[in-house]
Image 1 (tube, rainbow, N blue to C red):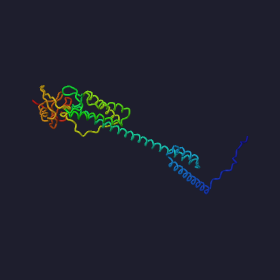
Image 2 (tube, rainbow, N blue to C red):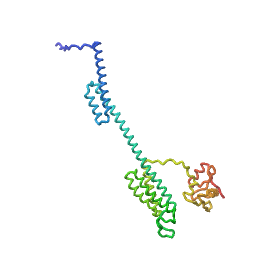
Image 3 (cartoon, rainbow, N blue to C red):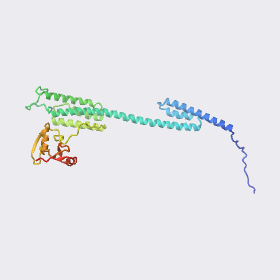
Length: 308
């Protein structure tokens, strides 16, 4: 049985001639150039209205409704997406930077308040240490009249203490509301210089804790002090006017903080405070060394003072 053969009778499309191909490419180039101008105009319009909330959606809608060819429309849409992402990323960076800057400014203002309050508190501590504050009692044990002229220095100290206490409230301005109430309540208790010494010390210490916690929370870093580190000899007095030293035989002697000559003489004679050892540094300076630091001093070239 003979096989059936199918013959395509559709006339073949003639191959484009060189002239036709030239004009086709020219037309495409013209179209691409026109689409490029169209997209450029849309971007220009968008750049002039970037503050408007609908500027980006409008750009995408205008690209879709434009007369650009499908391929050029797709390329323009992809480019618009890239522009939108760049803008979004930039805004995120700027917002984060602004947020950090604002937080930093607020922290610095709060730190200044705490530092100012701390200075006031230290001055109040100095006044308390002078011994002119406390209950209104006279030398014979009777109530002392407020403003007595018999104690002019005491009157000045009490007046300054009260005024300093009142000034603390002004530092609460830049403190966050959650910490402000506690700060103000305690500051009011620092007005009265006639409380007992124990009460005043307790209030000052409580306020100091609030200030230190506030500084820590805001990230405050204490500047490195240029003051030379205390030597073991300087630590001997620990803020007192006198110190009692002992030699190996158990004998004791008392030295005054402002009498460096007698202090050095006592150390060179083998006297040291309790729990300490009389030694010299590598340079020959007499030291009052804690027993736990003896090995360190020896490693650094120091030595024991072998007094008779």
